[in-house]
Image (cartoon, rainbow over all chains, first blue to last red; front, side, top):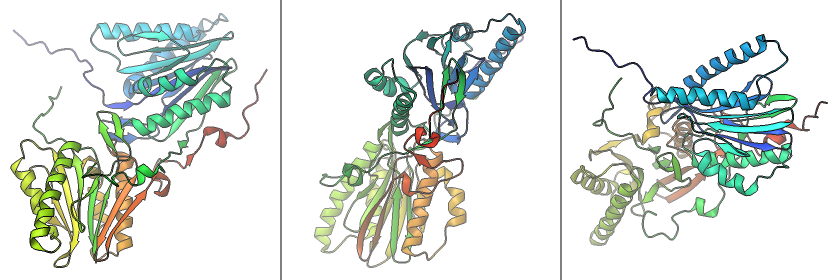
Length: 232
Length: 232
């Protein structure tokens, strides 16, 4: 009997992006992610764009395996292209794109060959703001603020406390920066180069990358073991 | 698909360095302690005192390295009383070796012992996993050290001054932090010579900017200037 090789499937990720954080604000959606592509514990790539506009009305943010994210971008490019070719005056909104992604992720999960990503999909169409997320096993939901990975544990509590539906652009950016700074302190795979993007009825803007200042001047940080019996 | 090799030694979180110069030693370390991907302590002190004139850099398991340091400090204290004068660096390093070697199956810690005594001057001893002891003009350890072998091969030279040695250590830890996810936080250095011991503390803004890194800002808003006007 010939042995049959097991069909290829993803067992573990190689180059990964860390958390994405997103919020609804007065004019639309604000999304933030760092530009790191980690290779295990090595911070190998530091200029990876993980926030991409989709069509006219949506923004996609991805964490997890970068090659799978690039494949998802190919799928979405085809989806948007075909939608445009109908030339019927209609265009796919964020709710539709989110639903498409959910189906793709779930069907791959059922074949034990997931796309190893957690996705954030936000957008505005006809004044309606939309913000949702899909995981690599197809879990999906919408909310006023979402995050992936460690962002769920570190950023969401801050957002639950400080988010409100009338945030201005400036307030929203400051709030996202607060979340990203905490992730920079407490997430091993975070890299200090951040991109923030927004989407409003007018369209999507991905701002240029920047670095955040961090604070280390606590006296307890300068002399942690003063008065200690031993090593700690 | 390749199988995982469970018998390969684990690389440890951390970057630790010890360097001799003409007159003493400079010890350096990062300040990140992680449990999995979470940074449990972003300002740890990994350079621990054994005697007035001997310090040790700790890497690997935080618990194992702390308990080894504590035992060695205890034995050295008794030894100093019996001897009637400060312990030598060699004796301190050998005590570390005895504990590391005789408990090799139960410990997972790599240590760099450094200090100054009146007989041999400044000395650095590496005690990696397994309990080998090796005296070296400079030693590097921890997972971040993988990124520094090439750097030290090129940048190390004999007979440096105190400032040259400290600059080298600062630069090296900072380079390792840039690429190793398990290293981060601030750079701590300890300089030991005939005059005594000096502790220094260098947060990120006092370290050089490397490739693909950016100058830090308080907020994206400071860079953008006036917010974009809305288009009708």
